[in-house]
Image (cartoon, rainbow, N blue to C red; front, side):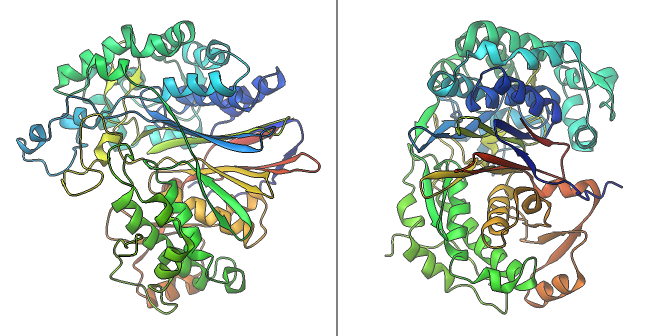
Length: 539
């Protein structure tokens, strides 16, 4: 059994660094930096390779978000590369089938497909901040898809899950990802010629070739043949959005996230609550620290799951949710001695899989970048002849007309994927993220507390054991094997339902990558997730 024991030291460099969940992807990004590319060029190249070597987690059939630190302007920029649900949405199509939520099951997953935003996001961020063209940075991804790549250990385990096999084998087109009818084993060489074809079309024709060409026709014809809503006009009209990043100050560090429809605000709300406690005095990995972080996270999720929606369609009270006054009111709902069993969203007005990567270049620019299909291989719908797995992000819409995230035409769904950054005194401090569905804000909170409150370096911050609250279920607090019995007993006494997770299942605690930068010396320090196959490399 793989125990995820890390003996890694933080990686040090001065001229540039890339941290990802796959070594081949990290190497590709580093080569871009060494050949004169900047952080954005390397980030997109890395994301494209991850589409190939970790295809269940990410791809051109999904969405992306990114934060970019411009070291000359000393400013954080944010791009929302998520797509809307179709203009043809009819809630009645779902209610006629007796459905009370957006389905994820194999035979109705076409309702969960929203417009894939990744490709336009790649091109938009390259055009605004990159120094290369999109075609320049897709070479390695095409090469690995055409000529083959070795399957890594953690990915082989994810690929062979029962859920993935059932998804991919349900339709003939999914067999593109099941060589010889079976998931690949650790060390197998896999070629993805259909995906290579799509990447080559994008390399030659840019985003226009994806959203208004043969790929778009193939996607929409496929979805409509399944009974879904997506149409050509949905893809043609799609554009990424440059949005204003949101932030909060935590103990002197400015922590940055993308705004809603993303869930980064949940991490910021949790930090605002935690700031009211002397976490350092409670001790690293202590029952008291875990309890206060868990309760803060539960309060933040209660608000986030109610209020986070597409701000173009619903009012999202961002400033009110992030106010320190509101956090001080939420703190009153936390007891040091017991779990709050009646947590609900507050009134701030007063009256899935994902991949994350981080790049910092030699000029001090940074790109915190996340790309996702949501669940493993998304909907399981793979576009015939093009190798594109389509995301199931639309499953996060609500069918409750009173909910801000109610399913509507041309509306962006709630998004779990959240890149992060931190600055201090107007300089870059961290480019970081922790992929993993609803674990992402929880991972952001825990790694930041590890670094800021307990002075851990990036690698040690990621090595530390984590908790994971079952947000969509009964609220169980999952802990990693290796925690001491006192922690389990004390949390249980406080009323938490606790479950211990071991082996490969520990990937559910997220996949983090962190690069820190020391301004005066330009020293870069990288950490990578021990629960994944990845690596941080620099030069």
